[in-house]
Length: 318
Image 1 (tube, rainbow, N blue to C red):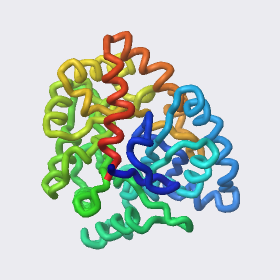
Image 2: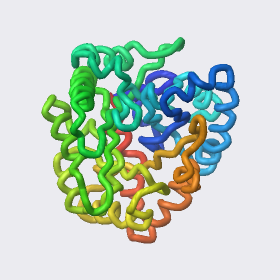
Image 3: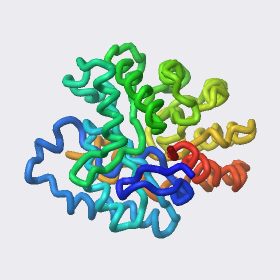
Image 4: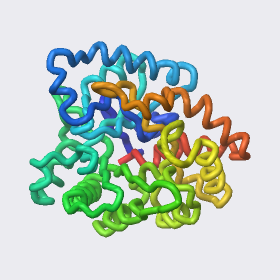
C-alpha cells in the first residue's frame, strides 16, 4: 500500500482519514519570521493553531491537513510537528516555491539551473528538512496570473521532474478569477504533463476562482484533480456557487477528481490582511457550513466521502 509523508513519519494512506489538502499551520510573508527575531515563539504559535484546529479534529474527525506553505511562506516543520503531536492530527509538509509576484522564488533559486532545483526538491522529499529530518509529502508550485515569468516555468519543470523521480504529488496555486478565465490551470497542467508526470498525482489549486464549468470539465477529463480550496474565502464565486459547481461535477461523474479545502491559516505573521481576516474562516468551517450546502444541493454521501477521504488518499500516497 502506498504511504504518505507526514511530519511524524510515513503512514499508510488508509490512515489519512478526512483530509484537507491545502491549508496553512503558520503562514508568514517574506521576511516576517526573521524580522520578528526573538518574538517568534513556536510554543505560542502552537497554542494558537491548536485552539483553532482542535475542534475540527475533535468534533468533525478531521484527520489530516496538507500545509501548502513552502519555505518563503513561513514553513516551520517543527511547529507542524508540535501541532501534530498535541492534536494527534497528520500534517504533511511541502517543498517547492510560491509565485514570483507573491514574494515567492527567492533570487538565489531564480538563477539556478533546473537540475539544481530538481535535486533540492528531491532531497527535501527523500532526506527531509529541519533537525528532525521531516520528509516533505507534496511539491507546491505556483504561478502568477498570466504565467509569463520564466523563473516560474523553470520551477514548474524542476518540480515536475522531481515528482516523476519520486512519485511525490504536486499541488499548485493558480489565479483564475471571475468570468475572464486566464487558463492558468491549463498552462500549469500542460507543463507538468509535458515532463511525464502522472496526472493523477496533480492537484490544480484555487480552481474555485472561476464559475466556468466547461473549463473545469476540460481539466478533469485530462485526469488531474481540481481543488475547491478557498471555501469560505475570497473570490467572485461565493460558497453557494462553489457548492453548485461541485455538485455539477459530481452529477457528471467526476466526484473522483474533486478535492475540498479552505486555504485557512492557523496563524498569519505578522498579521492577516484585512480582507482575509474579514472572511471569518476557521478549521471547522468546511464541515460545519459547506458540506451541508452540498447535501442540500443533492450531493450524495458517497461523493462527499470520496472528495474528503478517497481522493486525498489516491493523490497523497507514493
